[in-house]
Image 1: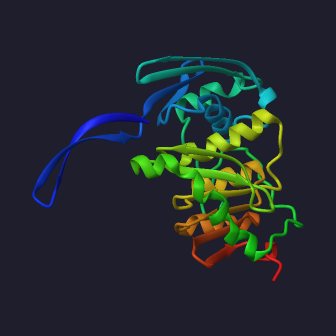
Image 2: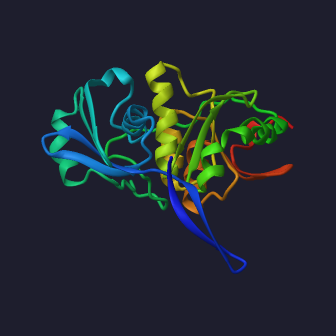
Length: 260
């Protein structure tokens, strides 16, 4: 966060004050041979973001797949050079279309996945009490300090089955926040198949696909899921909860998760 002097006009009066603002920078990730991508991101947890993004986008399966990592930052710009084991033969294709690669496979619902990528359904056996989902609000409530000061952040949390926070990441982008918590666990060598992902923004198909790829069994939001995200979640048995507010929430996918 940064602080700047601003003017506030309220009820006909002008006041000078110092306000907190969310900080952003432009990050360029270089994968080699002219292939890479740019994103606007909050400055913290850049390494976790890169690892988490490459994992959640299906380009690596573990931290060991990254054979080289170098990070530099100058002012409002940052650059990361990454080399991925076994990626060389795929670089020409990625150079043509690094971003969204659609693969319908003749189905009615498009999938946000890479051509040739195989995805698995969630393994049965993950269970959670409905009250534990409600407890997520209590365990995360003290952890929104950046938003309270600036109003400019989204959050992602990974929690265990008791709704205890394992890690969290604030970011100006809800997608980047998700990648940061995924990357933190990936770097620590901890699996995600018994974790709950809690996000403060809406759940789109891209965030749902990140969960499917990383074997996260349940994603929860206090906001809305989108239609194609729900369809994708139901196809792969991803648990999906929306509108977690007060003493209620809606279950859009994964009814078997909740022991009622």
